[in-house]
Length: 342
Image 1 (tube, rainbow, N blue to C red):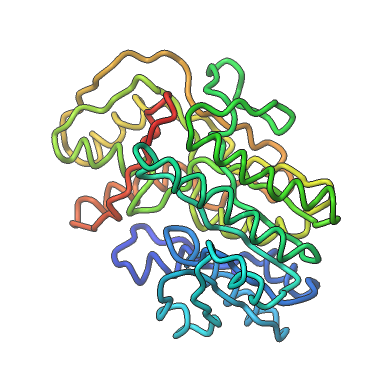
Image 2 (cartoon, rainbow, N blue to C red):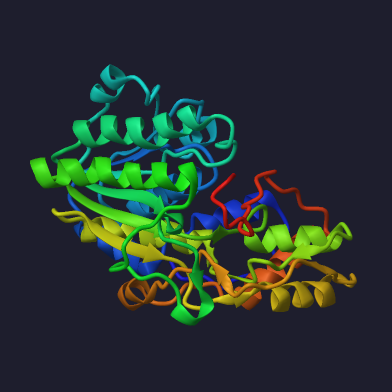
């Protein structure tokens, strides 16, 4: 399955292929993994990528197993690629109870953007829905998406938060994400449900993420806010591979795994690099305070190896994408926010 990475990404179709490309290690893992796979929250930004990758890895492994995508919205493109799709209102406990009881669950549902002003919906999505799913899949392995935002904003000097650090969520979004973890923790502790929490920040591809946000501001002649002067990023294709491989780490009590790239990037330096690649002047706003949502993913990188796509290549791909008029998803990360408001 190993293929050479392109110099540039030119089309959405090419991007989707790259994002869903399974690693050789994942294919081998799927040869040994028992049971079907259900992806709950298979729409959105990351869900379709992981669902396509799971389907491709199953096909390459030569083993027959179901890959099932679940979401409230239609998933016609996934269905066309061989993923079984089920439309389900995850707020409805009875509907969740009727879902196929696959042995392997990837939980991707969540709400971040628009949380400010509609906090009740954020809590319902991020806590009530996980309760429904955790309750229904007590006999399964669960890889549950979480966020590095459950940790506090930390200094650059710390090297990033580690799995052993206590969560200190800032703002209602981050609090609700810790609530999501606690729902799975409860069923892991009381029913033996095998769980791994994936504390991710920040997934990037050509259409969204920290790098896209910075590059777009430069392209549009807007200043780059460097108050939060540092961040972590990881190619979304590597997120998919690590997520599916992490099913093998699910345990009771639940395990925590940070997921991001091995380096902490300087927003100022990245902006200057984009300025050179885009041929645009770079201006800055704010004053670096040396703090941010920084995540130490040493454990994941030791388990799975370093990401397959480097930060420098991601910067080059993103700059080219913007130069050729590639569209974004219209979902800024708000990585610069330190007050927990999204």
